[in-house]
Amino acid sequence: MSNHETKINYIKKDLPKGFLKFGLPLLIIGIVSAFIAYQVDPMRASFNNIISLLLIVSVGLGAIFLVALEHIAGAVWSVPFRRIAEHQGFIFLATPLLALPILFNMHDIYEWTHLNVVVNDPILYQKSPYLNTEFFYARSIGIFVVMSIFLFTYLRNSTRQDTTQSQKTTKINALISAVFMPLFAISITMVAIDYAMSLEPHWFSTIFGVYYFAGTFATAMAVLTLLTLKLKSNGNLLKEINGNHYYSMGGLMFAFTAFWMYMAFSQYMLIWYANIPEETFWFLPRMENGWEYLSIGLIFIKFIIPFGLLLNRNSKMNPSRLKLAAFWIIGAHIYDMYWLVMPTYNRMSGTEGPVFGWIELGFISLSAGIILVFYYLAANKKNHIPIGDPKLNRALDFRI
Image 1 (tube, rainbow, N blue to C red):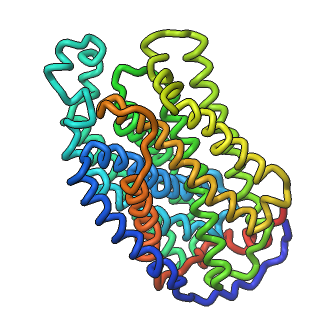
Image 2: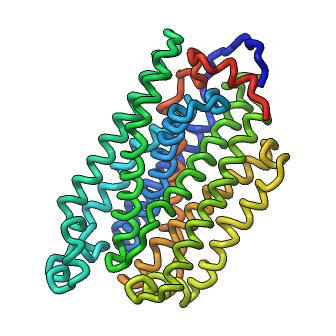
């Protein structure tokens, strides 16, 4: 790393028009499609709604985690991108819009909401102190409120530092992040258990929350990478940002692609080896009626292909390769959430095999629209660089 101080020459510039040009149509198409889907097939719509919610939580809450991670680790290389991550965190504020339809339809999709079933089922009865509608509502509201407070606190402190340039703000954010980290770990685990794992309430897995977190981190970093590349090409960022900075983004996507595979393999291997009915029944439907092909495909789509795309050094520094890998990782996360959620739809609806049509495409459109529009609302007319951060000069001189 160089010791000389770089003169910061940042000129604030409006966001590219494409955020609204593409975001608004996608959002409108998604809202209309979701509304029609709930009229035509409310159960299928609800399961796709869960997939969209899990994706938006990954993108938004994952971004808040990236901000906290920089502060608590004292990272330097990521400083030029922290404001992008802070604005990306605003996407998390869309989660109530996706959660409300699920909460209104819980009785149709969550078996543990049927009290007559719970009292006659020993496993569900033992889990009822946690799996009950009142506590579910309380957890969902609590997670949203607490994580939103951290989001606004980080952004307020960061924006204030643009003018004060105070090192004290950096130290305060590090202390805040020390509180955030355990609360985030609990929150991300609860989201995974509540909205995804409890679809099969008899199932046991001790690492499901970590499994979801691994995909969340890679997806949040993928979205951050795409936003960075778009803003850089539009002239919204500093010219000193280069392949050395991109390398760390690619490296983190690469690392958490491997970490996700480690979690996925560990979960499967332990369940396969123990061969306990309470655990194996979850995997059995994913090995028949066409799901076996998607299960095998998950290995290639979420691990082997992105792993190969980001394996060598040059691919982590090449914007075109990074863009391809980032899009692929986001698509792979959607694929993964579909694989986690939709077999339960088969069981509850009496259908067989994977289903994919306009309803699934509509909710993907809704998710993409939310990401683009909420980021635009958060970041337009704002600084895209934390120009007052004392570490910014060192960050711009970063070399690997």
